[in-house]
Length: 186
Image (cartoon, rainbow, N blue to C red; front, side):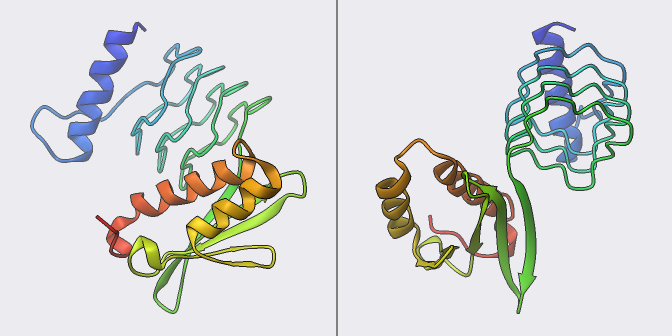
């Protein structure tokens, strides 16, 4: 499958998800998508069963509810991909980069996002996304505070290019995807 064909399928799938005219569910069962660039792709409820996605870039892809049965995801980059509800039965995930484990929950009506396995110590980073973004409360080890102070503390200890910074970005992006759950800063 060439890049233009894939772009057309993804555009029709986007329209299908949004209920727009000309939309069609992505049917990529058995497709050859080796090393495909699917970063940020919205593949919710897509049929990718038996697809060859080895080496594919699926970072930040939305794969909620996607059918990935028997798919070859060996060596695929799945960091920050949303795999909730995806069917991964008999999928080949050998050598795949799954990045962080993430979960979303509500505590007393407020959204809580968590990433586990951050850094060499495999720590947990938690975001209580109550209200506006500048009201969000971050927790990491004994740290409790705002995003700016967390970034400063992380940078001072681990530098700018580290798992913690990636996890912060991931949680912010995840929280934005759930923007209907709370108000965001403009």
